[in-house]
Length: 353
Image (cartoon, rainbow, N blue to C red; front, side, top):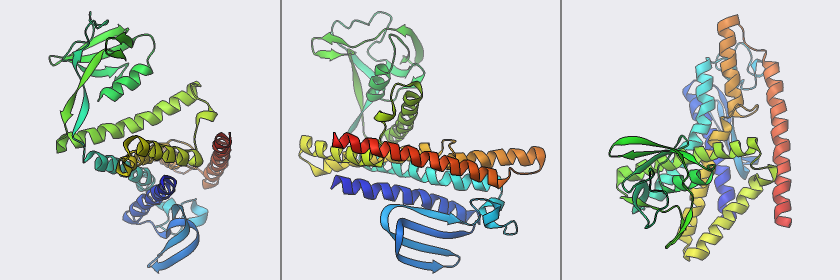
């Protein structure tokens, strides 16, 4: 069941991504030839005005086919409504609208999940344990952990994540009596206390009033974005390798495992579905951020060329030859498809082993 939910959700996220492009294109007066939900053979299609709307057999995405989106040779120099011929800022709006839709969906899912919350764990230290080893010139009860090594801390989970990623010491900023205090080169580490092995601090909670629910929905969404950057940083620095990456197959496996484990632990399908949809929200925000990276063939790569063309028009009164941009995006697409294939094979081999 959870795999089916994951497949449908993944396809819906891509379809909604394309819906973002579609709405923005229509708003900017760009001619949209087709908007399709799903891929493959058409189960239903209908022409309304200039746009063909279609529902296709495979629930694995969708597309928004705009006139002239791949260059002047497709749209034609004479068609003012072709994507290629629109002002640079309209192109930028259309390209950003897809990732923005994914981000919005992620935020909405988190908001729905948090709508039934009773309380949230905050970033305020309400007490330290007896015999706290790092009390001298360190954390005190009543402190709010503001940041760790420059990373903003919103809750106890943020505290744990960034402490685990830290080196031997951290630069921690706490808010004490309304004043920010820097604990420079603070050597806080987990230690064995009477009540267990931990950092030795206990965080408070905040009642889940509607404003607090909204606040923590936004905090969680920001943390989703930060998780993408942490993953990319780990990949670039070599902290993780290609074998640690997951594609569509791996993600479906993670969704299924998350749902099954949550159901076993709580004996509740509702709780399991909540965990699954939390993961889907994370995937939605991941799609938004990854699509905005300046990688050829992705929205971010196309957006980069929009800005480069705007600069070229300003300086040289001409745009970059569309065929060169097309070559770059084609090469990027081949590379992305190759990487996708490698990751998919790796995912399959993990399950085979």
